Image 1 (cartoon, helix red, strand yellow):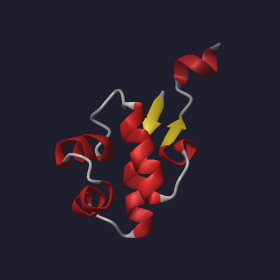
Image 2 (cartoon, helix red, strand yellow):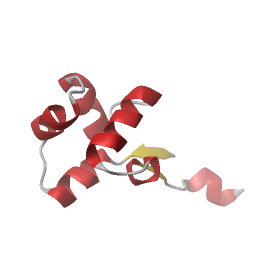
Image 3 (cartoon, helix red, strand yellow):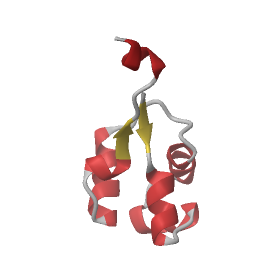
Image 4 (cartoon, helix red, strand yellow):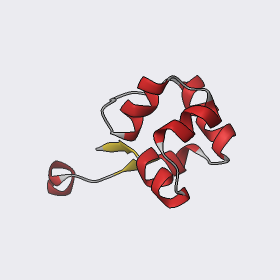
Length: 73
């Protein structure tokens, strides 16, 4: 499973969703969905903006978590 980990980054930096919206100028609903892992996709321009404005790399925001099916193979 691939998980977007904006929530972890926010917690580590002491940021709230409104802070991310201010810093990145990304729509509040998009930030909310990404922070709550309620989105199953992200547009490259959005990912690019998050990376540039927050000073991170895509790998800092996206993580792969092996699930039971993967372990069985």
